[in-house]
Amino acid sequence: MDDVWTVAPTATTAPHPPYFWRGEGPYLNPPPQRDICCQEHGEALDSGNLEAAVAIHEAGHAVAAFLLGVHIPSIELETMTLVRDCGEVTRVEGANVGVSFAGATRKTALTVLAAGVRAHQWSLRVTELLTPERMFFAERGGMNDWGRAQQLVMMLGDGTALTPHDYWRHGEVAEGLLSPHWSAVTKVAALVVAGPVSGNEAAAACGLVNAIPYSTGADLSDTQ
Image (cartoon, rainbow, N blue to C red; front, side, top):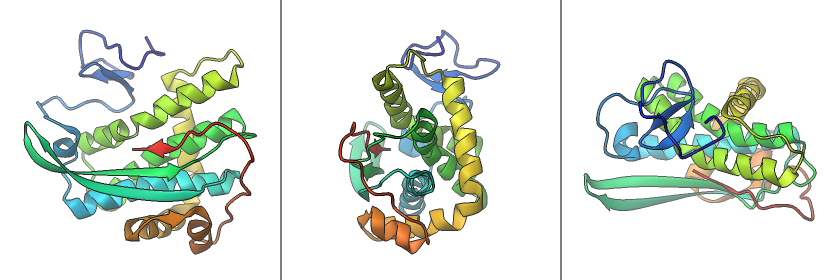
C-alpha cells in the first residue's frame, strides 16, 4: 500500500500516515475532516498570498538545487481563473523548468524534489497563516513532486523502490538544508512573483551559485 499513489484504504482517518483523501495519496499530513470542494477553497488564501505561497514552493526547490549543485534553467509562475462547480477560483501553478538530475545522487534529487512542500509549509508558519488544512493542501499541491520522485527512482534502475516514508525523510533533509537559508528562499520567491526568472538571476540574487548544466538527463521539471 505504501508504494501506491492512487489506491486508498476504505477509511480516510487512519491513525498514522500514510493518509489518503478521495482516492489520492499517500500524505504525511492528515486530510481535512470536513467537506472541501477543491484545492483552492481548501487553501483558502487570497490571490496575493496564494501566489506568494506557490513562489515560495518553487524557490524552495531552486535554493535546494543551488546548494546541492543541480542546475536550474528558469522558474515561472502562471495565474489563471478556473470555473468549477463550486464557483470561480484563482489557481496559481509554478515550475522549475527543464531541471535535469543527470549525474546527481538519489539523495540529492529526492531532497530537491521534497524541498518545495517544506518551504511552502515553513512560509505558512512564519506568516501566521498556518492551519492543519493548509498544511495538508500545501502537501497536496506538491504531489507532482512525489510522482516525479517515483519516476526518477525507476529511471535509476537500482532496484530500490521509493516508499512514502523514504520520501518524507528526504523532506526532513530538505528542511534541514534550507533552514539556514530561508532569507535566500524569500529573495528568490520575490523574483519569481515579479516574473519569469532565470536560475542564474535567482542564484545571484541570494548569493548562491547555479551549477553548470549537465549536457544530458531526464527532464523532471517541477510543476505544482
